[in-house]
Structures are given as structure tokens and as C-alpha cells.
Image 1: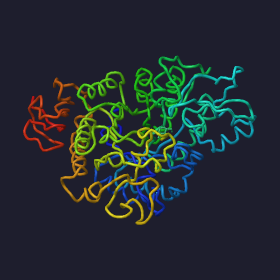
Image 2: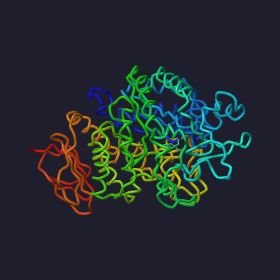
Image 3: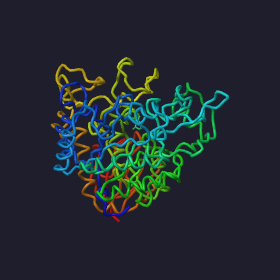
Image 4: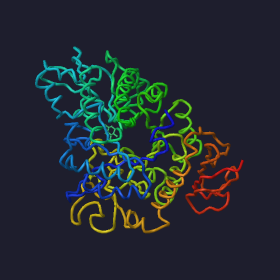
Length: 521
Ligand code: NOJ
């Protein structure tokens, strides 16, 4: 990756549009609401805003089921409202990435409707079809990311179609050149409207094995198991990370380059790093690939080190880092909840902001929010099921902007699409911005200090020997250090403390405290 790219020293922020801010008082976030809140992102010191899907959608997977890639769902506003957000963001020096969903469409997309209604039309081959085996089995043994089988029968034709997610999200056939042409036009449509790049949904899975071969099974799997256990029961040789994906992203990269745009991949795989490497190394395909390890680790020095080291040692360029998203329980909750969870999440943010690559915050992370708590009947995620931990609703509850009815998210008296999930006045952006000792101010100061450290952008990471309690590394003369223990610990070096996440003094780090230090050499 060239050192000249605008995203090199940037910090990103994910806005889950449905829960970010509601401007028209219908209980659902939208562009008019977002327009009003961009100042908050500027106040925080954000460089890049990633907006989750806002396209026309039947909302079976809350927008990750797109029925028209070139139109805005009326719930979220109009193209004019979208343009206003882009314009204002740019005036605030914030670049905007939009979420493109190329692995699958909605089953209501006109391409899929035509594929069903007119099997002879060119649209049939836009999707992945397989004949029904004579023995009544499925075409292969692939399991879906949401658990369960990936094939649904089209009774009219007697063929199955593939879906790595819901049956209402049929997978596109990326071996069909027409699909590539369609997406070239879609990318250009939004680039011409001024977006600065794309977060690419399910970037690891676009191309499938040409013969749709079964994956080798390496453990027991059945539909009743937790979705990731089902997934991990197979060696994913044939459904994801096929080498031909690189060619697609090289083609996208050429388009993106014309506009100076960023391709940020949701490269969700924690195992096949050599294959992942091909997608992001070289800078001529996906520029930055998200690494999700920090969402799947405990608060433990060894685990934190290996979570960082594993991808850094095997992927030669372009990693994106995040501890939160709209898909996982919030890290404050995962790391113990309450003040402890909040302290740990902030310390982890210090480390993530020190790593080579592009760090992202998720809305509400800067407020130290835990996952919202919802009664089972309020849950709306299609993969929620009966398991209280399974669904993704808890991380998706509306942003608490201000105290009072509607919490500044929606109009007083209006029911938000998901309940707030137990937010208090102290959780709100308004209260925190007025309180210099708040979590929001701690993140703002962290981003400001990090922004000032331009020298680290060109420096590799060097680990510092720091024992079982402390994680520490340096980039040039700047060290990032966290005490991952319940007792105060000494920093393993001397230096000037530029930032600290808690109230330790001198070279002492309190329990769960992190710091950025200019090391004396
Ligand atoms: C990843 C997205 O982050 C998730 O929310 C969605 O359900 C799947 N991709 C399917 O598009």
C-alpha cells in the first residue's frame, strides 16, 4: 500500500443507519437524522464514516438484503437527503464509505424475480443453481453463516439455489461476466455521487467453487448447534476465499483508483490467512481487509498478543481493526460489563489505534455502551432464535443522544424500532460531551493524540517484552501499552506519557489502564 493514501493515518466510525438518528420521527434512523449528528463525529475526531446499507430492501436482514442497489429505501430518505449527508461530511473533512452487498441480493430483487419467473432469461445465471440429486440429498454439504443448510428448492424448476445467509438472500454467481458488469455500474453510480469508497460485505465469499464441491468435514455438525460451531465443523475449501475473487477486486480497484476511493473488505475469516492475504496484499485489490480477532478474544495478555500478531505476521498489508460492530455483542459487555468492561474496552481501543492499519469505532463505542438489554419479544434479528446470546439486536439498539423521551434518537413519544435497552442519561452523547471526565472525552482525547503521532504511520510494530500482565509494542519511538490485569503494574520502559486511559501516575498503570508513551531511548 502506498504511503500516500488518504486513509493511512485515519480513524473510521461505523454508523448503523437504522439506529443512528431518526430525523422524521418514525422511530427508524435515516439520512435527515444523520445529517444532524455529523458534528458529533467531527467533535470526536473521526476521519471516515462507514454507513451500513440503506438501499431499497424488504429488510429481512435489515438492509443486507438489497432489492435495488441504485435507490434509497424510503425509510432512510431520498437521494437528496443522501447527497446532503455526503456534502456536509466532506465539509467537515469526513470521508464516507458506503456498504456494498455483492455476495447476494434480496429474493425480491428484479434479477432474482426474473430468474425464477423466466428460467430461460439471462438472469437465471446471475445466481448459483444446482440440480436436485436423485437420492433426495442436497447439492452439497455447505452450511450457512447463520447456521443450517445453504440450498433452497425452486419447486417450479426442480433446481436448488444457493444462499450462504437467509433463503431470502440468494447468492450471486460471480463467475458470470454480466454480474461483474452490473456491479461496475453500481460502483460508478455511487462514486459519481461522491462517495469515497466501499465497505464490501462478505468480501471473502463472492466466488464459489466451479463444481460446487462439498467441503471436507472436520467435526460434528447439526442444525441445532450454535452457528459458528456448525461453520467450524468444515474446512471451507470450496465455498469461500476462492482465488478468482482477487480478479474481481483488481477490477474494482481499477475503478476505485479513478476516483481515489478506498475498498475496505469485510474479509471475515480467522483461519485461512494465506488466502486472505491474496485479497489485500499488493494494494491492487482490496486496500484494507477487516480483521475480526478482537471480537473473539478474552481480556488476556496472551490472547491479545496473538490476536494482533497472527494477522500482522501473515498479512502483508492493509488491515482494518475493530472491537465492535453491528454483528457482535459490544466489547464492554464481552469484557465484563460495567466500569470494568468500559475500562477494558477503552484500553483495547488504545492498542487498536496503535496497530498498523485502519481502526474503526462502532457507534456508541465512544460512549462506553454495553450491549442493550432486550426482552425476547422485542428482538428482530432473523438469527435471534431462542438463545438469549444468539441474536445481534443488543449491539443494534438506538444511539442515546440526549436525556428525555426519545433520547434524542427519535421524537418524544415515538417507539424506536428497537428499544433503547436500558440506556441512562449518563450514557448519552449530550451528557458526556458536557462532562470532561466522561468516556466520550477520553475517546476524543485518544483520537487527538493518535492523530498527532503522524510518525507512526510508516513504522512497523515491534513487540516489547512485558510479561503476563502487560501488553506493549512500539512503532518507532511511540509505545502503546495496556495493563491486562487486576493489579497495578509498571510500564516496561521509561518515557513521556502522551495519553492514559485512567488515573495512574508516572510509569504505573492501574488495573486495565492503557497508555501511549514516547519512549526514552
Ligand atoms: C455481514 C453483515 O455485517 C451482516 O450484518 C449481514 O447479516 C451479513 N454480512 C449478510 O449480508
